[in-house]
Amino acid sequence: MKLPFLTALPVYNEASHIPGVLEQVGRYSDRILVINDGSRDGTADTLAAIPGIEVVTHPKNLGYGAALRSAFDFALRSDAEVLVTIDCDGQHEPRLIPALVEALTDEVDIVSGSRYLKEHAGDNAAPEDRRRINRLITQEVNNRLGLRLTDAFCGFKAYRVSALRNFEITETGYAMPLQVWVQSVAAGLRIVEFPVPRVYLDEKRSFGGSLDDAAIRLAHYRDVLDRALATHPVPSLTCAVTAAD
Image (cartoon, rainbow, N blue to C red; front, top):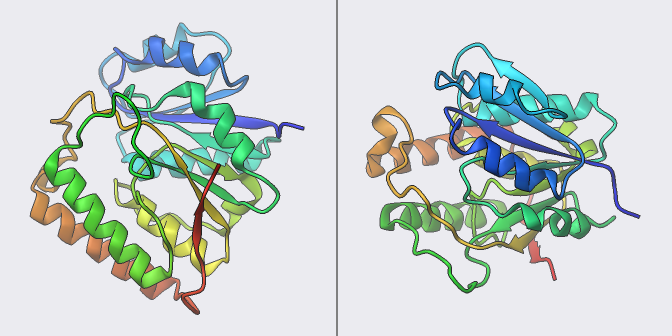
């Protein structure tokens, strides 16, 4: 029996993408939540014209991690058993939503999309600095947490809602997934990766301010990982990640 699920999309100035992406998401998800993270480009008006969706609005832009934290809080107050998170920039394929939910078996708490678990026809090459930093940080996460991830930063995920109670998300930006991995291992959550296509539509997407500098971004990710481990010590390197069929 398919678990009841909610699909959440964090958005910031995505008015041009919203109608097409939500139309696609609506084909595979009966319940859609959009977190409007302080958009100033007409996103609010665009969302208001779309029936049947639920919206949480941040009065000002707080960051990607803060938007996902709001999605976690909303899901915990809902009757959904699964939360799917998917980006609204067209880089994830909504047709895979049911497959991620199906991969969330009784033995799994998080299904995490991976753009590097296997190659797909038509995969784009990742921008060099993003691929390099992803590879470095993913390896550091694996070494320090005993995981076997191939993609530490993919936003396309399915979470068992009951597992969300283990998270104390304080990182409001793009480094937020590092807190998720540390806190997941500290709580003994069970993780599988799921292969998803690698699509880059905007290779020049800004991370915001100084984080557009690759060296500064890498240092920031390492700092967040250090602080997350200091706050949530991992008892032993026994956790592993498997690949979903």
